[in-house]
Length: 199
Image 1 (cartoon, one colour):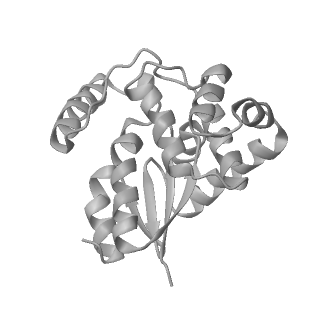
Image 2: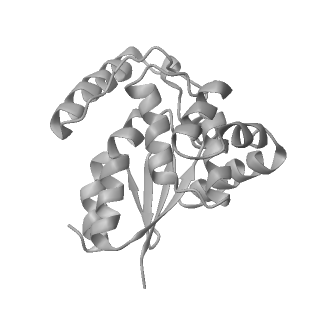
């Protein structure tokens, strides 16, 4: 039986972006499934004591920036550490992807493309037209998804993802859970691989 990684992430998180493709590769190697659960970081922080970037002490912000230079270099990934459209509301993208998944779409490449909008392409992923264009690029009905993602059903999906994240112990993203064991941060993916037998 295939094992499953519960994956809680935000499209506005650089750390989610840095780990996203590696998680997909690990899961493929291990023959595992990924349960993609986009969440709103603001909702998670509000219930677990986290602070948005603007409210963190300067020392914490400075260290975050140091890590945002260190990790992409280590991983050989291109990233803009200070993108034009950040901070950005992650709820529109989260709702759209949650809805797309419920309609059979593959969240892996869709989410990767949306995240690259923030961290490589200088796109505003809170803008409906941008999300519609990205969804179209991925072979989906962008206008339809954007329109439907503003409704109660999509909002309920995103809220459910948040509740599931909190139930899994999540207080930051990305958050991975394998058989109930939690792993916080893209820098813990080696442990996720080991847990899946792919390390």
